[in-house]
Amino acid sequence: EGIQLIVDEIPSFSREGRFNLAAVESTIALLKDLIQKAQSCSLVEALTAAQVIENSLVEMEFFRIISDDSILVRNAFAQREKDTKKHRDEIKGLLAKYTQKQ
Image 1 (cartoon, rainbow, N blue to C red):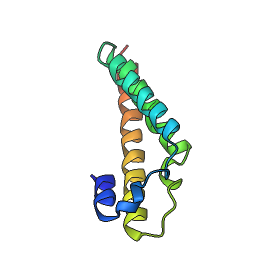
Image 2 (cartoon, one colour):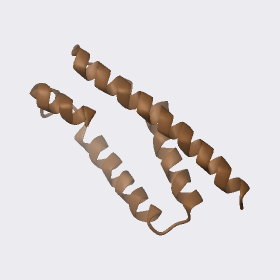
Image 3 (cartoon, helix red, strand yellow):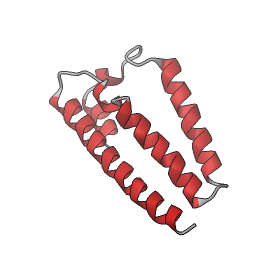
Image 4 (cartoon, rainbow, N blue to C red):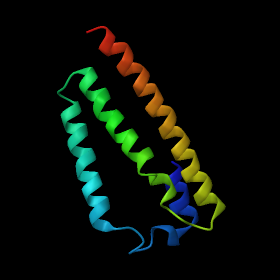
């Protein structure tokens, strides 16, 4: 939702050449693979995969690599970062809960 708002409001944000296409395609392929695998694995395995994704986004500071002067862009990515960290913490709690039951 936030990223789409940016693209709608600032067409130059998604201009050709702004992002490394190979890196984006590689990330999309990895996510598709993890999603596919998550459909046929245990809850703990799915949570672990989700945790890997969330941790990767936070640790590589994904939401900070987009430099832009637009306050709209900065705010949208700051919100995505906040949401990702919250989701990561929720996953951590669920993993702790369900691994104790095993």
